[in-house]
Image (cartoon, rainbow, N blue to C red; front, side):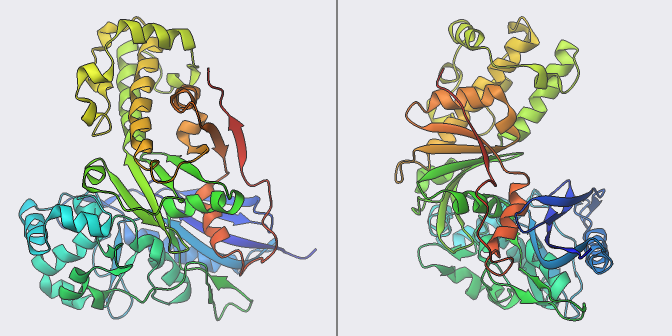
Length: 460
């Protein structure tokens, strides 16, 4: 019996590192998952263990040649963004893989923006809110300013997805989806690197840009195999939807971050929108994608822990709570709305109003959890509306964790009366997106029509 041809995708998240094998119809035929404990950088801040991650990728790549039931014809990679791997002249990591949440020195940040026109002007051109280390270009700027001797030893700095691809091919390339995700590196008004990248000599540390839908032929494995150069995970998650739908839509990709993506709105955010965490991504095709972000998944995680402790229930008790329309209506009459707790202009900034509510005001866990979701969805609506005015849509797709939350989905659907709101299920959307990015190279057949499962939520 001949081996089944497959594409392997490494999907590297902050917590879970996964490998998927997809057949030519993009069905998962094998899945592996690992977790690694974090290490610390020279300042004691937590960060990814780049050595352990590297060893795992290399060992997994070698293991593909020993597979009997599958023939790996192609490989691609998706990973979280805003993270650089700095290589020395031998291609070895020279520094830790710094965490994008690592605190950024205020004086250095002020120095940078003072030198390049101020926060508003820089953010407008780069479509990037001021986010400290989460602006990955600022990580390079910091190394040059604070550790110039080490900076000079950097031969090439690769975003994490492209480093993973480098481990397979030995080729050093940059990818537009990694460059175009709130990095401060890309000038969206000029569609090229921003001038500061040249003035500071950062350009000399960046690899040439390679098309996201092209592949590199891998040598020395005794079989015909190709590799993509990897994609930023949020951009990869959008690809299955772009492949399946032509009419304008918004994708709300939910997880720790809830990211609203409008691939039909290429406009850059204005100064007010930037303050509300609105930005632009670059799709794998190079087109602008207007987006907005909300830390709602993280807030949900923290608040359900508090609810579980207060009401003496299991941490995941919220999974047993289903949407109760009458309870939502009663809470709306009995408790103050978000507008009465804080200014309306702050509705989508920071955490929701729930953290300011007294848990003693609720008669049950169910009441409290319904109110939590009301407050989170009110924020989500405000965030999503930021990317709608210049490109009206008829459908909103929600994927990720909140797509399986009936409260979130019902409340969101009711908040957009003129728009169809769907819970969308794409098994491992990020990994499938990375596979679809190089679809024309492998397998080159028609994309199956059943990749996405949809559930329409009613307006009641």
